[in-house]
Image (spheres, rainbow, N blue to C red):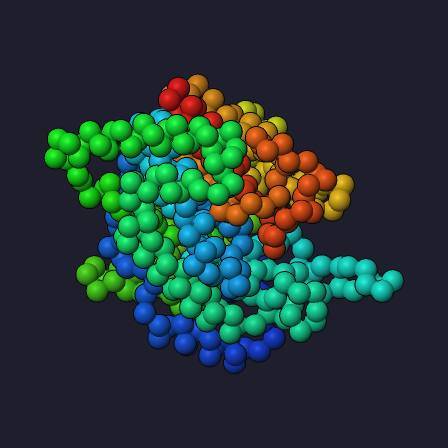
Length: 452
């Protein structure tokens, strides 16, 4: 169990070294926003977080698979019923493919209802406007500042943290309505495949699988079996715990246990840029009871991972800690084996999950950030190959995706080209897999799981 000592105050955390934080110009406005956040009800409940920990313990033991996916960076404008439903729909489709085709329980974790802040490589962004260079603060997500390239938009505004809360509440309300109100019913498996996906090769493959599921459901109904799991799913929320003012304000003491939980989300993770062992993010997340994750990139060593596990999960509780590896397709086979082997030899209880997105980003000749679908698949395949060779469990995938027909990643069954990127490039930060590419990925991962 994490350290039960009191949560450090914000000043102490910032003094400890807090990477990737906004530079707010008005301290009084920050205090006012944090005070308002502290007065708001929880977005999630401690018992829900505990149930997710139990599910992730099954992933740790090799008895389940984690599907985590959603936007790179949510936007306030994106909180609409259609947008939330479409993201949920592609996650439901992917989950049913993985469950049915690979015969493994799937833990469903949305990258939504809080993913409004992004770490950046540079504090500033420079563009040429009317023949002169203009430098402004970098866009750090709607939680911090605006995407428009103007001085007023790019000033960090703490009121946006209050907006994050309300937008996250709206998203969670929609997700709960869809998942418990009939939309997630397995009898809707065909309805999830409407519009453009039906005309694609992967859509046809999905439809054939849906027909098999229909026949199985008819048989189950005929023998009087109708479990609740056929009619609803439990979809949990997650985001990167980045802006300390927000996460600290949303950390509350659970009345059942007198222990702290971050009630902004069921699952929060520490990013590659903020995983300093003596840093503020590790310090804060070491104190909460939620299941948590840590991104491990190419510079991560096994000793780093073991030390992080000792800080974040000192009781070595299964389900508490997830390592999300993001090595890049060209490096995963070299860098991942010594990391996994030494961590496992140390007896660390951890779920291993692949993030095949962040290590495979590049800039196209047109200037768009993009990813090759083949690189995404290659990293996931390498992740599975490493775990198969070591006799460990490839526990899941962490994907940036959307339910829309965007053109942000090249390749896949639609054979999107770099010249297609301008057609519908809608991400405000990193490129996402579209719905067809996401579903294609699910079928390919299901095949890998069957072999695993």
